[in-house]
Amino acid sequence: MLGGGRKRRANGESAGQIVENRLVPGMMAVGEKFKRNEIFIPEMLIAARAMKEALKCLEPLLVAAGIKPEHKAVIGTVEGDLHDIGKNLVAMMWKGANMEVIDLGVNVAPAKFVEAAKQHHPELVGLSALLTTTMPAMRDTVKAIRAAGLPVKVVIGGAPITPEYAREIGADGYAPEAASAVDMALELLQRKA
Image (cartoon, rainbow, N blue to C red; front, top):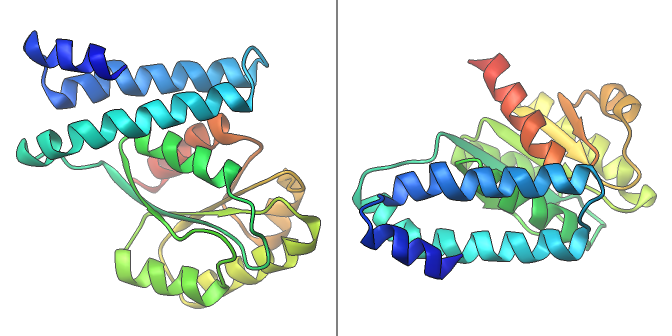
């Protein structure tokens, strides 16, 4: 991917064109293959790492060209949960969809999500949980975000999460895996516009 990017730059493609015409469609294709069970988490991780490296190389060129991400999101794994593979995949997929992503890491307290949303002014907040025991922390985080009156859409996901649970706790969206997290985020952001 990186060698191809250098070649494309030499052939006159701008960094923005490479992201828009190559990287984003590539990650979307990876996401679709994952949804169809044609590839699995290891392949998703490889693609996400390649995307991360490509974006790292292109970022100075994007900044110099004045190209900014279209949207901003905050993401983290809720308090009590130390798992980050799913969260990391979603963060990379969102970056690939031209979003600035502020990753709060794992074991993030509700107050930390609220603080980050106040500081960074995202349009979207993503909450991840792998353990059923941390689902109450997800509920508490959504409650804290709503109580703070923040104008953000909240997307939740993780192994124990269901669409019913998302509705029950007042989340705006649910994504069963990383690929659908991009679709859900873009759908929510379009509704907001």
